[in-house]
Length: 142
Image (cartoon, rainbow, N blue to C red; front, side, top):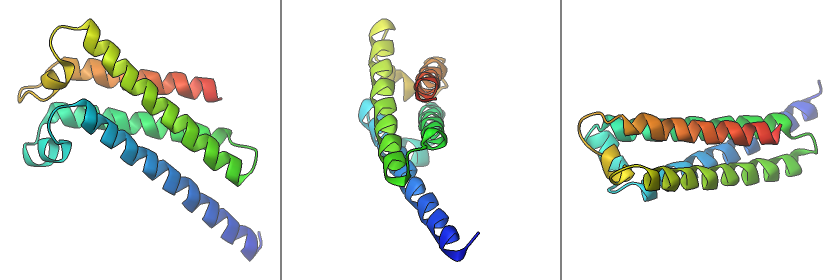
């Protein structure tokens, strides 16, 4: 491996990491928009475990999609970055849609249930939906 090869690889890794981190941030903000209140306060100040589980599942789900998109990109760096971003955004859209569908199919408002102080079983259902959607996107990518 030459120095220029190493430099290229480091740049590619950094570029994919930037896209991945941007998608993680977008996923966090999407979850923040779908739930009442401000997640930063709810998780870090109020220490709400329900909200933390939902955000954690969202971050894992986005990570799965980004991982699969990167592993499947064979058309060069630029095309790989674009496809990773597109697949990531698509995954976030479908995760939001699954949240709305789950909210419509279950009693009460899912966002409000997830923010209760006591652990609510609905958080696990919602978290599983995020991961399941991500796995479907991953399968479609590869």
